[in-house]
Length: 230
Ligand SMILES: *Cc1c(COP(=O)(O)O)cnc(C)c1O
Image (cartoon, rainbow, N blue to C red):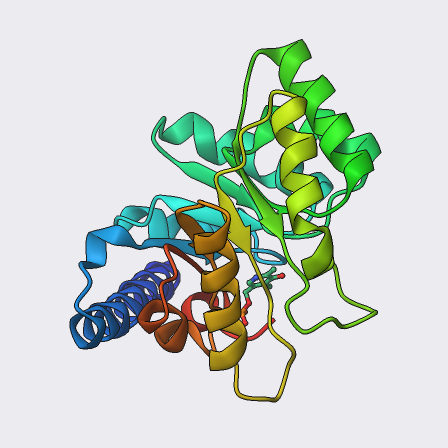
């Protein structure tokens, strides 16, 4: 029993330390770029990790979390949310139109709006529930065929469609190609946001959030650096 409690405390300490290290890195990147740390929302991406791994982070003061599947999130989060009213839940993974209703009900922000049919489904769900999560259009900045996100050329028409459907779009999200320098892709996403009058930018993961912050990210999505490898 005593050793069980010690193991729990160990986990809680580790979570606190990892969180402090990530916040430190964000603060350093902000300083280098002349930004303020409170301009950046750190989203702890807890996909594949159980509620027991999330609890120590909540106890350490982390309130924003990200998931990539509606089904996994609806199994994990209602009970956690019942413990604290001020948690914020972000959907960072691809969303099927037939899950739009569940997503609008469960999430405070959706980062993966990437096609006309999904905008339609979200507009209907938001109207039916009189609820509007923060919305990001995901842009396929590396023009990779296998990746989610709309083509850069389609961004203006997607924004117009959303406006016409009564959905405000709050920002852009991107996941740059793996294994190459991400900075040019972050800079491109920042330019696209600026050109389209959008102020929020969801970019940067465990391997590159420092660079993303220097290039204007307002939301970083960090999993591995907070929870360990999946
Ligand atoms: C899993 C995931 C993350 C977090 O990735 P890490 O490399 O573990 O930090 C961020 N964004 C999206 C879209 C993801 O699917």
